[in-house]
Length: 349
Image 1 (cartoon, helix red, strand yellow):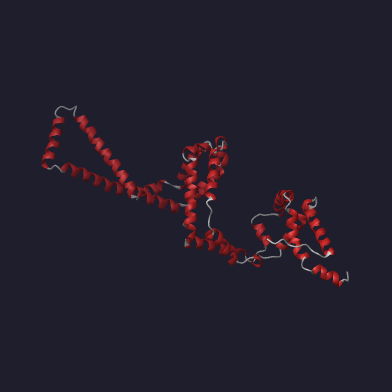
Image 2 (cartoon, one colour; image 1 turned 90 degrees about the horizontal axis):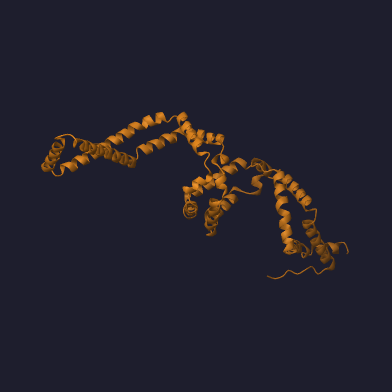
């Protein structure tokens, strides 16, 4: 890169060096905080005069959102970083000393439960889907069939203690086998079919009963009883259910789904666009100061963060001997523009 030349006019060169020295002193001296406070106040005063749409358009924000949320290639370092953090968090000893009630209060749990209970339509839909699931029907029918067979087997065992009953049952079984070798199998299959059909009908009938019994009060009571049992558990107890590796894998699966599929779907893009449209529809006539007020950002908050980060960052640049170069890059174009020479010529200097 070609090094920029310095001003050749002696007065301009002297002014340039004086300006650089002044700027560096302003940034590194005791007056920095006062200077930053004055700049912040001036910026906030301007924020009261400027509207959102004067500064940015909906199209600009949408383009930026698409660039980073949809189109930006994602590096592989993110899953690795999150994996490292997940392992450290999972193993942290604070989980052993922290109970669930230290994290979530009873009142907060009650609010969550009340909100969940209000979702009656979803609850009834869930009950219908579960009770009507073919897998549940098959499982229930199989359990009932096994119970019936077990009961009959117990009856056979009991019959052996009755004189003559064992021979009679053996004769009956022999007759069935001789009459039709497949009859016993047919009876078993018939029993299975009957139990399956009966179970499906029973589950359908039970749906209304279950909905009637699962009242809002009953659900609240059950949920709060469960919370009363688990709220004294240490957070570390959940380690036995979710390992650090599982936690990492869950994130990676979700991240890869978002990165490789979800964010490229029309659905995702439409939601992104609708969200930005909604934001602009609400705040297009709002001032920048109003937006800050809406999200709760105050002058004191901004000043606190400026005071926290600016001095050490500037000190680090100064220590690395980079600050002087940064200031010079900002000022040099003006001092090379010839404007000062023109002013001096006009003034006869």
